Every structure is written in C-alpha cells, then in structure tokens.
Amino acid sequence: MRKRSLLFIFFALILSFSLAFSVGCAKKAAVKEGEEKQLSPEKKAEAEQAAKEQAVKEAEKKDAEAAAAIAGFDYIYFDFDKYNVKPEARETLKKLANYLNANPAAGVRVEGNADERGTAEYNLALGERRAQSAAKYLMGLGIAKKRISTISYGEERPVDPGHTEEAWAKNRNAHFVLTGK
Amino acid sequence: MLKKIAIGSILIFFMTPCLQDTYGRVYIDIDSPSLPKFPIAITDFYCPVDREGHSIWFPDQLGKFLKLTGYFQVIDKKAFLDTGTGGIRFADWTAIGAESLVKGAVRNEGNILSSDFHLFDVTQGKSLVFKRYTGTARDKRAMVMRFASEIMLALTGEAGVFDTRIAFAGKKGKNSEIFTINFDGTDLTRLTNYRALSILPHWSPDGRRISFTSYKRGNPDLFVIEARGGPDHLLSNESGLNLCGPWSSDGRSLLVTLSRDGNEELYVFNQLNGKKYRLTNDTSIDVSPCWSPDGTKVAFVSNRSGSPQIYVMDANGYNVKRITYEGNYNTSPRWSPKGDKIVFEGMRGGNFQILTMNPEGGQLTQLTGSGRNDSPSWSPDGRYIAFVSTTGGKSRLCIMNSNGSNFRIIHSGMDKYMYPNWSPHLNF
Image (cartoon, rainbow over all chains, first blue to last red; front, side):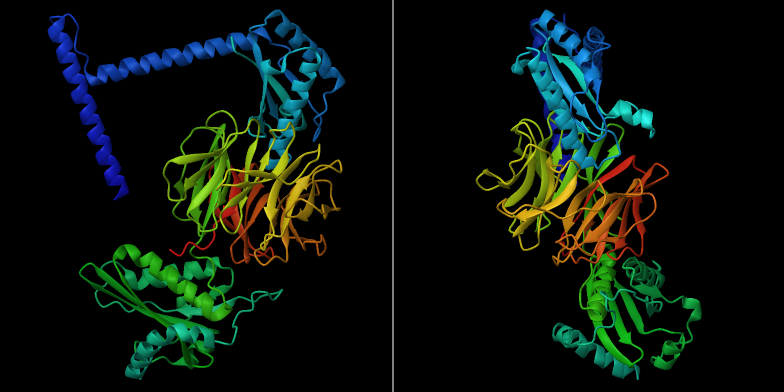
C-alpha cells in the first residue's frame, strides 16, 4: 500500500516536472524563435549525468593532487592498542607541519584508523585517539587548531585488506588529507 | 471419539486464556544445565481441498520454528504408527518416543484461510492447547508462528522469541547499511541506503524505532529511524564521535559515547529535552555502555588500567568498579534481561570468544571456542544470544542458546556483519 502511494507520488512528480519543463521550453522557443533546441528528457538526464561525472572526475583529480602534495608524509603508524605518537612518526609530522606553514590556505583532516584485531566499537574510540594525538602534535608544531579536523573510521577503512601482521601494521595509522584549498 | 475431541476443542478454545495459568507443570526446564531435546510429533494437517499443499506446509513450517528454538526434536513422519484420521491412539505416539503431539486442519473458503492447531500431551493422553486462526493466505506464516509461541508457553512457561527481529550493520566494501531480519533468518530488510558507514543499531523498547550512528554527513552522527523504514532524524551531531548505545526502558534516553571534549566519555542523552548528562570523566577511552535491566547500573569498557576491560558503575556515574581481570582484552558488555549475567567478548587464545559472567565478574563461562566470535546481544527472554562468528575470513550472523549450545547461522554472504541488536517482542 505504502509502496503504491510512493510510486504514485513519484509518477505525479515526473509528470509535473516534464510539464513544467515542456512549458518552459515552449516559451523560450517562442521567444527565441526556435534558436534553442528542445532537449528531450533523456538527453537532459544524459547531460546531467555527464556533468556529474565530470564533477566527480575533477574532485578526484583535486584529491589526487592534494595527496601528491604531501605524499611520503601523509601517514603515521601506531602500535597495537596504542595511540601515542612514536619517535619515528615525529619526522613525518614535522614535514607535514612545514608544508602547512608554507601553504597557509591549506587545512588538514586527520583520519584515525585501527586494525581489525580489536573490537569494532572500541576501535572507533582508538582511531579517534590516534587522530587526536596526531592533531595535538601538529598543534605543538605551531599549526592552528582551526586548520585541523579529526575523524575516526575505526577498523572500517583498512589500507591493506589482508589479515597478516604486515597488513595490520599498515592499518594502525593516522592518515592526513589536505582540505580547504 | 472424534466428536468428543471436537467438542473438547471448542471448549478449550474459549477457555484458553485461563488455561495458561493452570498449566502448572513445566515440561521443559530451560534453565536446566543439560537439556535433552523434547520429542514432539507433528502430523500432516487435515485439508480437504489442498491445492496449495497446506497439509504439508503447515506442519513443516511449525517444525522449522520449533527446531530453531533448540529445545525440540521433531520426530520424523516415517516413524509414525498412528496415521489414521480417526481418534488419537495415544499409545502409538508414546511408543515412538513422542511426549507431545500437534494435529491440525486448514480450510480455504474463498479468500478466507482458517487453521486449527491442537497440542496434546500424549503421555497423559490429554489436550493442552487448541487455537483457531482466521485470515488470508498471507497470514499463514503468522498463524504457524503464533501457535509455535503457544507451544513454547505451554511447555516452557514463556512464549519464546518468534515475534522478534535482529538489527545489524551489514558491510559491503567501504560502507555499511542498517538491516533487520527475522530471528529465523527470513525477511531481510534494508533500512538505510546511504552508501556511507552506518553502524550500532539499537531498538527502542517499544520496537518501533531504531537509533544508530552514521557517517552519511561525514561525521559519525546519531540518528533515529522508524523500524519499518522511512526518513531518519538527526539526534546528535557533536564534533567527533556520536556513538549510539542502548535505550532506557522508558524510551526517553539513550546511552551515548561522545568525544566532543577531546576524549571519549559516556553520557545519558535525554531525547525529550536534548540534554546530555555526563557519566564518566577520565582521560582514557570509555566506550560501549549498557544499562542493567533495572536501570540502576551501567556496564562499560575502559582502558584506564592500560588495556580494554569491563567496568560497572552506578547509573549516575559513581562507584566505578572493574569486573574483568582475566585476559587483556574484554569488550562489548551486554546485561542479560534477568540481570543475573553479563555477556561480552574477550581475547582467549589469540581470538575473540563470547563469555558470560555475573555482574560482579564471577562465574566466568566461555560459550564459544572456534574461530572468532564477537558482538553478543541477548534475546528479550534471555534464552538466546545473537553474535557475529568469523571463520576462514567469512563473517556470519549467528545465534546460539544462552548456554552456548545450538549454534545456528542466521545470515551469511555479506562482506562483514557488525553490531547485531536483538529487538524486544514486536507482537506481530
């Protein structure tokens, strides 16, 4: 019953849209004396889809450029069930801080991640702590708090989907993503 | 004889409500530590014009429901001695080891489908329950389910969990959606379609709503949605984690984990006035809270001792006590509906296993032993536990009896099952 009424609303919407569309086009066509071609709804949908894909591509390109800008210092790693910044991570954080100092328009999102060995909910908390630890360290290096955001994905966004010590070590990380450019 | 039973049946039909109080005898003692399965025979149903195969479908479906409880041995039809349509020869049923017998009839008149179910104690040669249900063909599963509940009530003193569902997060690739499914694994329903991470579903005590955490807007925020589907409503979007926990029994409040203050703390979130009352104040991780059934205590996970362990405190946040000392990773506590046990998962022998203990941390009992088993959730009657079992890299949604017996797979095939949460009785 519910489905049927939803379907009805859906068709009613489509009908009203297509009516509005054809009326609008007819008016324009009249004003511009047929200069403007009347797009069929299918063509319009195609054009919209193409525009969407273009936008996604551009966003992806931008993301890739942003990732390339900090490649090599976009991850730091943690020990199992720990969230303290390890000595070997300090160099990475310094490089990132230097980049941010040189690019004052850039912000950074710190994504905290955990390996699959813990429990999912606890790992959300652990990921949050890792992101917070990294953020605090960056603040200590003089990066303004407002330029840094944090988020935890727990164990749900592994870099390496494997189930080995090596994979787990890669998945216990804070990942830095440039924002606000 | 037939006539006698027929007249008796009508009487029983009208008397049923008061009969339930007069059973007295408990045929199956669920709390007994070693429980032999209760032998029950179900004959083909009488169905004069049987185009849809009801005479077979009804007893088969009833047998499936009863087997799912883990308490019944449904006797193979091939063993039946009494195959007649006349009166019941009780001796023929006790001879094949049956203690109970179900007979039934189905009638189709136009669009109306009506079904009779009759439960007998064959050792005493007496009728226990008679029910007649009337509806349409679409109601036939519900009719069988209702009578399965009647059988459970008559033989164990409690109606069972046939009218319950399990909510969970099902993962595909990077994202997960919220689903619900009948406790027998039928009628899988997807509630969300956000193509984001959606996790931690929790049923409201009336079974009408489900709260959960979703990354649909980027940040892990708290939402609520009608359990039958519909638009969601944002409940909390504090910066950082807004992790969904269980509802209070009055349906007003939710236990939540927030990290707005820079580290995870537990709060009681009052949905009526939007206020958040802080329960913990510790620089370590505090997460996964749950209430005791009387609402006076909260169990939770904290790493304040250096590793994740389970703690219990008063509902106002005072009197914090650690209760797990064995093993260096104990998480996901859930208090049993009767209040006598806490189920949780602990690292044992390099893998997570499901254990129970009493609320003081004593009487530790390990329920699972092979593969990885985590995320336990009690059925509303406390007789079953839903959980996620992973072996050979394959994740499955499972249930078992609360003593660890009768492992059953409810659903498999998704990349990963997470956070099963058993509904209250839904009375469908």
